[in-house]
Image (tube, rainbow, N blue to C red; front, side):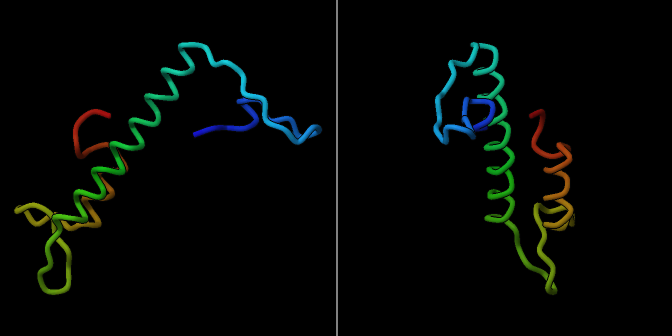
Length: 82
C-alpha cells in the first residue's frame, strides 16, 4: 500500500516522485502488509468452512458462531500472534 503523501506525491505539481524508504520503513511496511494479509486469510478460511444450523452459521465444533469468530479475528484472539 502506498501513501502518496508519505511517498512523495506533490499536490502543487500533480506528480508522484517516490522517495527511497529506509530499510526500517520498508520492513515496517512489509510487516503491516503481512499482518493485513494474514487476517484477511483467516476471515476467508472461516467463511469457507462455516456451516449452517437452524439459520445460523457456525465455525468449528464448539458452537462458536461465524460472527463471533470474525470478531475474535479482528481483536487478535483467534489465529495466534499477528
